[in-house]
Length: 77
Image (tube, rainbow, N blue to C red; front, side, top):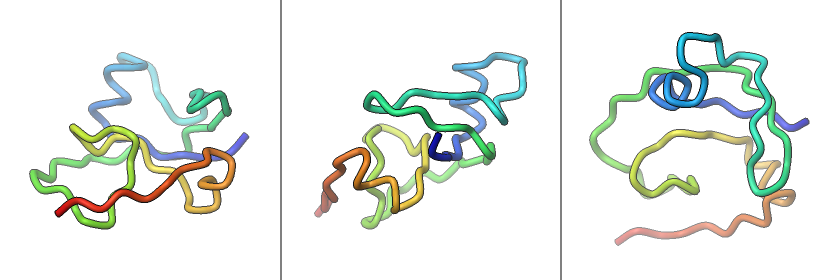
């Protein structure tokens, strides 16, 4: 599978007390292995942020995965 990094908030929500590292998550029908968990307490979104979750930054995938996910960049003004 591809790889991804998730925030601690998402790890706790999805996996509870269990370690999320090594877990497989499905994004748009494709498997991604969680290779890291980060603390992300930013209150501002960045213009270059293309996550699929507009409310919070939560799942990060390599740019190489864009082809698999058929992602399109979005610009916030």
